Length: 403
Length: 91
Image 1: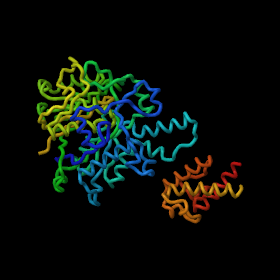
Image 2: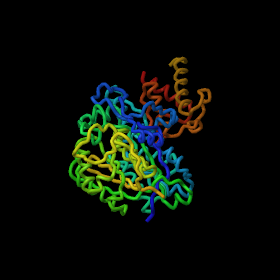
Image 3: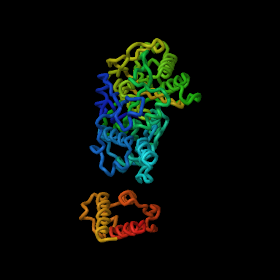
Image 4: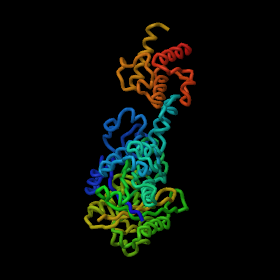
């Protein structure tokens, strides 16, 4: 079977402007969550989020580009730029048709929609900018990435709410495994931190007003983030032939559907996804040293996920480490799995396990080693990344240290 | 329409085209075509939008077939005259 490795990674999110800055923040257990800053914030009851501070689009893109790029698209392009630079890939004529892009997002160009609804409904304008449609399309980020690097193979967007990135990266892996492509840029992007974006989430009453505390007894909900992470997935022989540095190997993927409820997670669906990924990787549960949890910080997610981990891993659940980095970067919704894959790559590559910060007191119903508050050094060969989305759409990836 | 008003219309249209083309207004000559200025189809749609915003007009322009539109986009000069007649028609 064709093997898939990671040869580049890039990001912009509340923890850093690059992948390395993000990893440094994860090692330090630094929080990127703070007071939100955007128009009409005073009309929201949720004042916090993992917002990218001091971001100036005009430092990265021309005026003409910015007329076409919603923030979620800008973030994806910045992350892809970094990942492509690290990979050292040159997309020549031969490779172009064998290269593609699969990105996850949930809201797509939500800020573009929000701003233009404001113009026509609130301000009574009867004319909107001609590029509203190409900006708001949730496929626009993938499209612009394909144009920026002349990726002429398969390009598409995957939208499965909070699992979008994991589904996207799983699709990328399968495209390469199945021989449809040799290189796929993949990950996800989200920019829901605007009035309409948060107002909608307020309605569900699952958001915390004071912090993201996954697995801690005093948790009270999720906190949103924004940004993107993009990886270069590459067929192993292709990467070897050009002497690329390999960051990790992607060895397992599975997706399941709860098929039960539009918001409440189901333990069986989560278990089947984790078991499926192990089966795909050809591994026993004992091989997993670290799990990056979905870990949203809602009572129902955390308890269901911990119970599912215990059911799948049995006694080994007490040996493995599990953490939720959402405590630091917030929940990037359709981009979250991509940012969280950094923690898995860091675990297998550097032997550093990112912590679950804001962990004030253990929840007896979780009862796993959630790496509270401080990063831990542990040599880990294989790591799993969970995403259990609204809609009961689950996607689990497994990465292994490449030697 | 007075000469002063006409001059101001021309200046505004030229300024819009110059911004789209990334040129100085002085480089936007009356007989230049959009293609000659380096303005592509997306740039044209944005130009039409900017004209509508600047003069508070509805420009009869269909991007499906620009040549078939009442709004003549052949050159800078035809566009200026088209804007003038739209303003005159508005009264």
